[in-house]
Image (cartoon, rainbow, N blue to C red; front, side):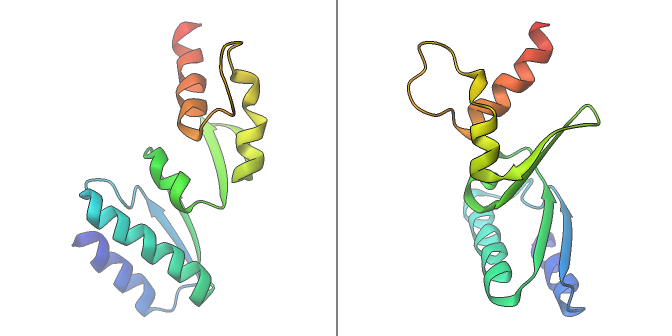
Length: 116
């Protein structure tokens, strides 16, 4: 409910850009889905831009148009979602079939730090 309240407050000021930090964190799956649907509606029908940080990869898969990946304070990649995914296909193992998912890209990129 707090997230919905904060969104309503921001929208009451007719904001054209929303900057949100982990906006779906702590929400149950139904509420998270509702918020992501609302985000998509705001972008399409109201012309609002939304910038949000998240560790929930399914949120990115569901509603992101562009992805910027920052790791340890360094920009790794910023691109339209499909171009972003294509840029990380070098992480594939020889036995991988098909394109790596966004989640697999994130896991493999993070794991490289721990394995080094």
